[in-house]
Image 1 (cartoon, rainbow, N blue to C red):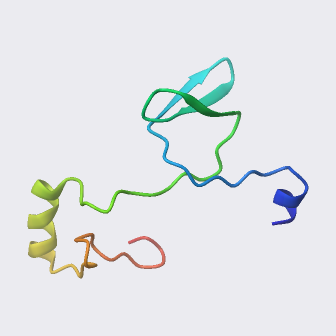
Image 2 (tube, rainbow, N blue to C red; image 1 turned 135 degrees about the vertical axis):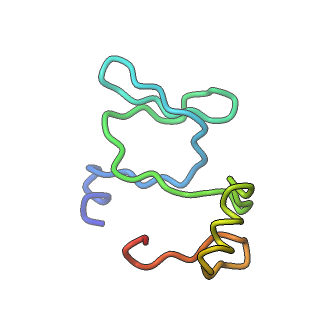
Length: 82
């Protein structure tokens, strides 16, 4: 958090719909294609919707491998993301 305090790192919590790389910069855009941030580097971008994408192919895999799932339907992964 030192880097945040020094202004070297910015932590953002928002929904990015698309990213465009142009002239050495990444433009993050919202659902209306409005630029919400322009940067040279993204360290980590993560997240997902609460509904399970790929349900048609993922459900049989879950069943055939006996995977444990969260209430939302996503398989539960280990700390090493396996």
